Image (cartoon, rainbow, N blue to C red; front, side):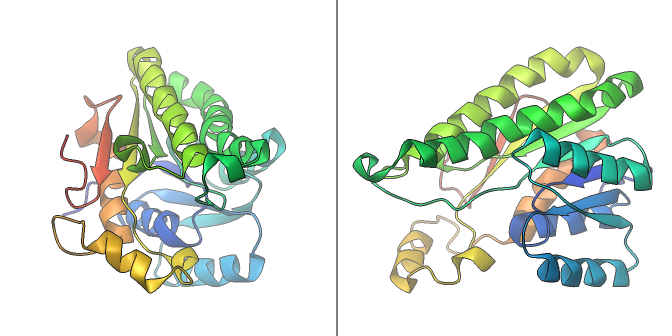
Length: 251
């Protein structure tokens, strides 16, 4: 049986495709009203949301740039107008993630990663905190990545920003614990979703062969970990990272 999130309001950023989409569904099926966000592809977003609503799930579709103060305000206000204060925040939105040697990265590559993985969690956390503190209950889940634990090379912009995101999660966990607010991370392995469709087959197969469980992870594998962190049953767990990668990081 799913953890019950009835009477809670969740926001999942970047949630019309991939891991974010699966997470939005998992939280909604557990009873939460869910804010679903996108930035660019309106047609795809509306198609996903129509499917979501057709299943009798409670949600609202809002558009906004998760890496700017204006976009964050637009998204949070849209959710609050429909359902009230957000008490479950899942920061998932991500940009393209080019893998390059450091000589080929520009500072803009780094800045983009910082904007999505440090600035965005900062902006969203500040936005939802007043209501969570007043309620003395809140759940913040940042979607990290195994790349930090595995120290993946030729990926320094992404890995560095994920390290910063992990640090933010841990610091917020101790700062917000007295208010009944937990802050945790879910760190997926490589789980092919829509944006990986054009990735070389040999690259995918090379990674899959490394997975001790011998299978690909699925978006639902990640979504269920988020669902747990969002639940009442996880009330005494904070500052933690769960790697959802079939045993790739057993340390």
